[in-house]
Image 1: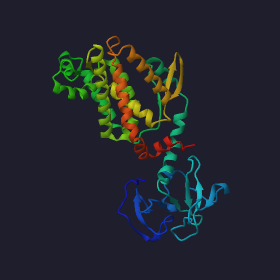
Image 2: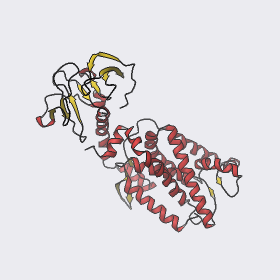
Image 3: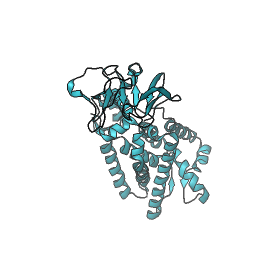
Image 4: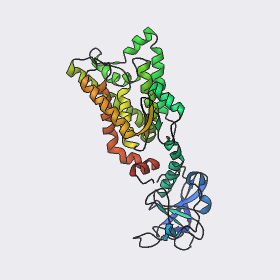
Length: 373
């Protein structure tokens, strides 16, 4: 359990841990409130006055329905006891999360959270705040937007912080596209496009990164940046800013390598610009991490929501079919194998660390384990 803004711990008058019984609780400060934590099991004791209603909702009060409360936990050798010296704590089941129960003192109203239960309860409140927006019907404005541009609307949990890297990639790409209006500038920028057949060998590793910020025109740039905007903010939030940048560049480089290999095998061109491969990697990470997210799909005039798995699955199938039909991209001018290569790289990077990533994000962990009801 990660607690923000902890002060230096100190003793709490010798009160023992309600769960371990032998370990003394240590005082910590979370924001402006003092709480007590067990250094052995990581449990957290919350005095009645330290309940954070903003994060956790209204404070639990007793008595509750008899079916929701019991003394002790099944299999426990000793029931949890109040650190203030009162009777055994009552186990209170929390509606909204399967198998989540916290311990409450009937006398003083204090609450004991076993390791991670605080984070899970906070995540439940976040989910309850997000859920109405995720389950709402689409608006006429969103219908008209997708009708004209044929781009999906995303329904997902909000990122916890500003996606600085995602916005920076978009800003740099847009600025370079504006500069490309000038012929002299466009000629200079072309030096940073991936051109395996004509560039010096030492330039190719640099171009594997720089080509991702260049695009063949506004119709190439804008859809790419839109998908990066709606999906990249969530992936950046989970990975972290610098890891996300490295992930983005790695997926783009893997996609470019796949397209170059397809070009060599089929006698096509090996010049490449665009962030499509990197964004395909972001889509793969999104599919792995955000199972409950939905994207709208429009069939003629009818707009409806699809789960991320279905939406991205259909997209992936279309890319694979196009790659088989036009492997070198010479007919359509689209680097189909770059999309597939970037997607494969994104999945291969994120899948092995998925559990570690989700456990650092309490709400995402609950969404992926299916414990939210």
